[in-house]
Image (cartoon, rainbow over all chains, first blue to last red; front, side, top):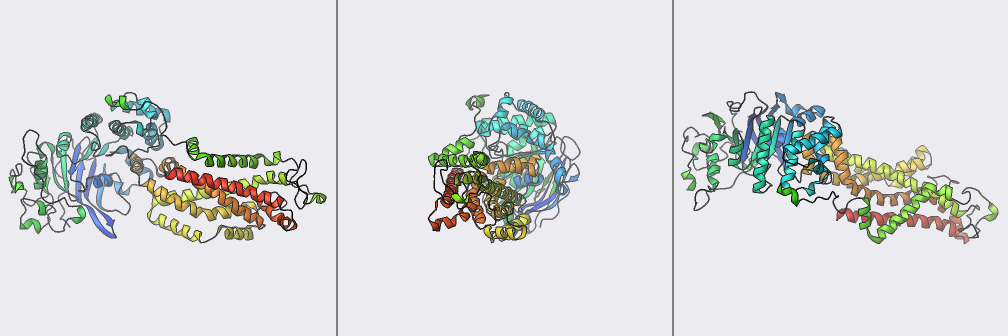
Length: 347
Length: 289
């Protein structure tokens, strides 16, 4: 078990106050009869109107974090630690309190086609939560849906409401999903790779709409992606996950040029630079570990880290504050400023 | 908005859905079966009005008289008009199984959806409860119900519904579990839609083709079982007309060389049951496709 890190780091958001606070969250799943951790000691906070990126490789626990916040953990999952929304404990919510919480926290999923009932009309999908959870009349709900569709750039909303999901393209459907998420007047958006299933030009369009609306409505957002650059462009702060742990939290503007954790540096270096001809891609050696494979009592990234020393394999580092960010690296202060050009990673 | 131009404008339902579309897809045999069922249902609703003579008026001087003018199927052992009894008997013979199917499907779907939604302990309790119920044959339960509540159609129908519920629940639980795991359900949950709302408006409607197909096959079973119960004297009570009762009353006629009254009722049961089974199998094949 990793040592307890310091409480959520220094306020770096555009505004003080806390909308969502994830406090030392550990989630275990039963796999083949054994309880295995998928999230380990995850702490995160999002202020009102603040966008926080969550970046990591597949299996690093990004989506599981969002699912834990949305109370969508799979059957048999055991969670330790706390998730607080506007100060209230999320795990304790039941019945109508849980539904009210869920209308405050909207989720946008990666694959809109799978997340909309294929045999119901777009209008049914968009207005269902309004009608059944918030008691809005059908005609009023439809009017709001059309308005919201216009806000996400869909002009002929009334016709769209009568259509079925298979009649809409992926990009259009993702915009419908965003509009539906915003309809209940949420304070926090959980965007789980909202553009990964879309082609590149549509991605940019959808991202721009999401970003504009978020700023306009002053929503907090947890933006999950495996694209470090995208997270940096959209978010105020970015958290980097590896093997079910957050290894670095940093203001997005400084993440790329001044990383605090060797993993972040390696991730940034692995992305090909389109302005230079590179002889080969700088891949991180080894393969990404799942959270439940990560060894106890040592740094999870140590086996792949170019800077690992014996100490890294003997103690599990906690989160340490450094230069306005947080890093889960024993040598973080020692390596300050040396990580941006990871020559050693080529070895 | 370039994407909009690429999208079909027509406001159509996905192909191959809708009641008529599915029915058409079952082919000529399916359509013929549907026709038989419609006729039988018509007889069930209006049979007593259509019957040319009283179905209960006895005239012993006409006992076992064969078909004569105005009496197409002749008379039974007590001199009652067989055609009139068949038409009037359609009511209990058809509505009895209908009640069984509605009760069993409702209870089964409810248990299935609750088990699939709650999973864990609720699922374990429901599933093992169903396993226990599986051990009781429907007829045995009906005999038991008759012993406790007295013979009659209502007790028999409820007993059969209880006996059929595990079959329904077992099949639908699988379908509900599969539907429960669909991402759109998680999306609805996180929107704050209530669990009963998701179940009633999304889970059950998306399982409806399977429910209808299963109800159709189950109707055939229920009809045979109810007729058997009436034959045993535990269901519809003579002299009320019912196809099962008619077979029981007229079985002596088979030995005496007058098979027509018993045979006519038997043929009605066979034709309707076959029609329901053919249609049910075809619908199942459509759902699986």
